[in-house]
Length: 480
Image 1 (cartoon, rainbow, N blue to C red):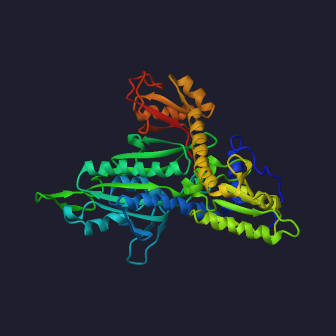
Image 2 (image 1 turned 60 degrees about the horizontal axis):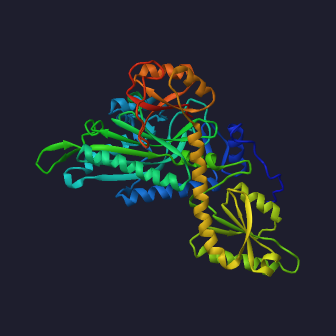
Image 3 (image 1 turned 135 degrees about the vertical axis):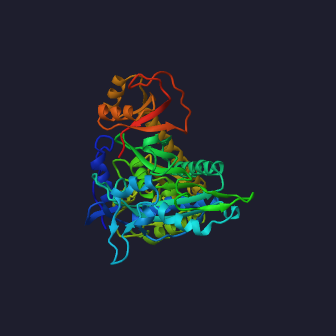
C-alpha cells in the first residue's frame, strides 16, 4: 500500500472531536463500521492488538492478586437475571432476549454476569475454607443501547473484564474494592491516562450494589468517559442466590461480594482520544502493538547493506523485549513515515547511506514529532530512555489538560457559565437527588458524577446549586 497523503490528515480534535474520532478509527484501520447492525462494529487487527495489550496489563494485575480466569456461558436464564430486584430493574430494558424453545424459559445475552456467576457460587462455596473466591473472565457483553452509538465509547457490544469475588466479611470485601482501584490506577498510569476516581451517588450506583466507585477519564471535547467501575455488593446477591458458608464458629453466614469491571473497549477509546493528534494515533510504549519501526532509506548501490543494517538494528532491539518491525516494503520512505505516524508507533529508526558511513542512526519520536541523530552504539540506551520519557510526557500532558478543565464553582450562575465553557465542575453539594436533577436541567446534561476518592476535598461552603448545607464536594460533568 502506497500512502502519499499530506501529513496533517485530521482536524483539530479539541474543536471537532466527533469528526476527528471517526476519521482516526477509519484511517488508522481500527474499526470498520460497515457491519450494518446498529451498535456493532468490526474490531480490526490494529485495534485488537492495542486492546490485547490493555487486557494483558489488567489481567496481570488480577492474577498477581489471586484471581483465577474462567469462562461462563454467554446466555443467562431470565429467572436468574430476575433474582435480585434492583439488578433486573436496572438492566431489563437493555437486555437482548432469546426466545426459549417450547417448554423452556427465555434467555438473556449477558449485559453483565453477576446472575451467571452467583448460582454457581452457591454450589461451590460451603465453608470459610472456600473463601475468598476470586474469579474473572474477559468477554463481550451486550446491552440494547437506545442512545446514539459511537464505536468503543457507546455500543451494543463491547469488550471488558469482569471479576466476581466472595469473602467472609465486609472488611475483606472493602479491601478488595481498594485493591481493584489500585489495579486500575497502575494500569492507567502505564497507558498515560489522566483520570478521576469517584464514589457514585446513591441513585447512580450499579444496580444491586451497596457502593460503586468509578474511573472517569476526560475526553477532548470536555466530556468524561467512565472506563472502569468496582462495586461492593454486600449480601444483596448472596441472599437471593443463597451463597452461604459455614464459618469457623460453626455458624452459617452469607458471603460478602464485590464485582469489578474495567472496560477494554472504552480504555482503548480513551488512549486513542487522549493522545492522538492531527497526524494520527500517538501511543505509549506499553500499549503500542509496534514499539519501534525501522525504515531503510534506499540509495542505488547500497540497498542490500542498508536493509541488512536495518535487520541488525531490529535484532538488537528485540533483545530488549521490544516489539519491532523492519519495513522493507517497496513503498517510498515518505509513505512509510506517514503510515507509521498514522498508526502511532512511538519511535522510528531511519537507516540510510549517511547513517552507514557515519556509524550513526536517525531517530524520530512520534509524540513530539522530533528527529535526531545518535551514535550507533548508544541505540539501546537511547531507546530505553525514550520509552520512559514518552510515557512521562504523555501522562504529564494528559494531567495538565485535566487540571485545566477542572473549575471550582460557588453558585449556580458560576456553574452554568462553567458548563457553557465545557469545564468539569467541582462544587459543594447537598447530596439530594432533586438537586442533581436540577443541575442536569440547568446545564443541559451535566451530571453529578460523585465524590472524589483519589483526592481529598473539603467542603468550603453551602451547596452551590440550592444553598442548603453541603455534605461533600462532588465532580459534575457531562458524560458520553
